[in-house]
Image (tube, rainbow, N blue to C red; front, side, top):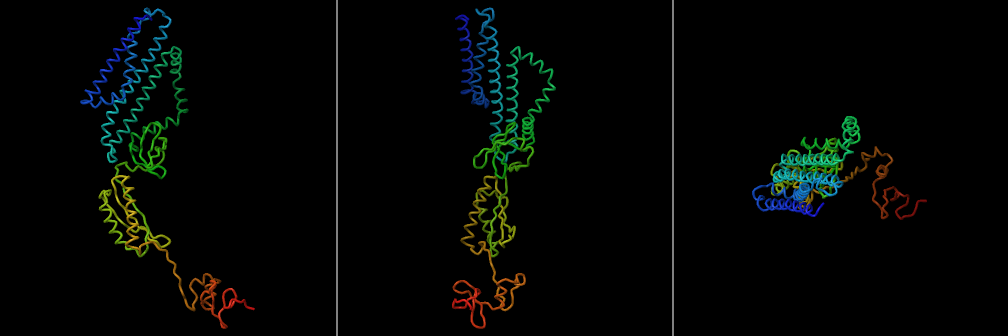
Length: 399
């Protein structure tokens, strides 16, 4: 190309870039005050707009085949610019799609509390539809670029002729992937799982941070991230603590002795919970729920809170308060395990019939004695005292 042709291309590109700069300035300084769409447009379309403007400017100023000195290069340059045009316009279209959906998501984010399950459901569906739209646009763009090659055009005609067989083969090869995609659509539009839902996964609770077509990202309570296939939630039961609302009930289990004044403990629980800022005011209770095998009484205190975070904190605070209060003001309520020794005099203990050869029965027949200095049990006889090991009181063995 000649020098003037290069100058014309440069001038056209410069004019296109200046137009984008003016639009950028207007969106940033003027339209942002009156239109909420201005911010997302600048955020997502800034670089793609410059790229699309540059490519459009080059295509407008590009000389025809007859005007080029070396006409053999024209098909190569024209093909390359067509691919650039498709790529730049696809990038710009994706930016527009993300800007439009961001406007909706920003409005929904203002009501993103755990109680507003309708807003979180819409956010989940909008994000999922945006990913689907972006995938479709990307596939169409790649197909358009491939079909600019003559060899691929002939291949495409053959693929369309055998589309039925290829669809079956592709379906079998991508069965798990397609299953995840359909499971993601099912979860998003059945309202079973939404963004920011609090769920229990393998015994630990966390929040749904991201929900895509194939994977669910869970932010656990200790800030770990678990990446789980979507198909897991479509086939396995799971707990969703925010399905209908964020309010939840917590409980504290603790053990006390039979002498524990349950009425006083109930009054203390009520007084503490009523003045705690995390209690939502719905209900609380204290009940003796079980008597364990070792004779310990199990109490359960139940409290209600506005969300799962408050539930954890209130239960921990109540448990700490009860430990301190019972230890300081009700020591008789501390759990104790008792062992009872029975003395039957000359009569055999009831359990001697069960263990006829036990030492207790033999000792009861000869008369109960007292343990000696070495720990052996002495019994009274006619000629004095003898020990269980066959020695007399002086420690000498019998002849």
